[in-house]
Amino acid sequence: MYQFRLLTFLLVSYGGFTVAAGDVSDPTSRLASLESRVSNIESKQASAENRVAMLQSMLENLIHWPSGYFALLKPKTGCPVDGKFISRHQSYLKIHTQSQSSSDPADGYSSAFPSDTTSSVGSKNFVTLRFCEVTLPNSGGVSNWPKGSFCIHKISFKFCPTYFQSGSIELDSEDTDDSGEGHNSVALGVDNPRLYFCCQSSGPANVPIQLPTHSPFFLYRYGGECQAVQGMSVSEQFVQINTEDDGNRDQLSGSHPDVDQPGSSVIKLNLCYYTKL
Image 1 (cartoon, one colour):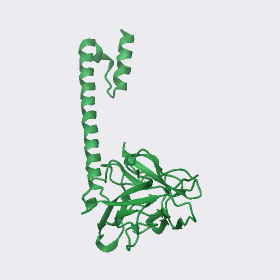
Image 2 (tube, one colour):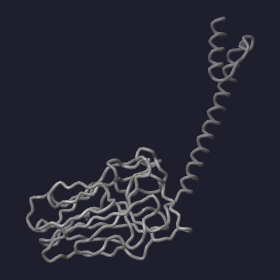
Image 3 (tube, helix red, strand yellow):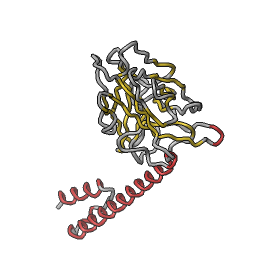
């Protein structure tokens, strides 16, 4: 009997309750009481977890994409679900890439891009980039982008947000019968187009920032590491553009995303793709 009382004392104390030794004279009654209290604790815990989940959902709904002038590269999942990205046209740039024989790596892309990112028409090769543009002025002109290390697209003839520095990449498209086309506010020209960027390194990439988590999105990698985003998992992605071989005039200026050049006339843009945890 002593051992039973000691065991019951330990079990009840561990569960957050302490009873006197004399209270265990009816083991069945005391066990039922203990089970009832444990069930009550579990119910309260479940209720608390539901409240936390509700508060997290409310917090997510309070986080919106910044206003201002910028664009994100569009993944295969489409533009982020946010009214700021609604536009009157499909924003895209179709680049006529090297279409003669080349010893350089071919056009290519990773899994988060649409399946028609690379295409061919006859002997002509193309890379198509699509953009999610925001052209909604900030009240007071103050940036509401969090500090971090990443790049976004700059809208032509507009300033970069606070913390960001501007730069560009000019792509030397196919010389022979250049058939590039586009409709966007991101690139200057369709023959030898110049893409504009806004990049910042005002915060460490491994410190998570807050951005909307409703839908997947791209940011450009800047500084060798993908920016951590709270509530999102991230994978490294790329799009590779085989530019003109003959007298190549690719040009990188100012602040621009991380770029690899695996050949004498190849531009490989490194991106980070975010999906909800």
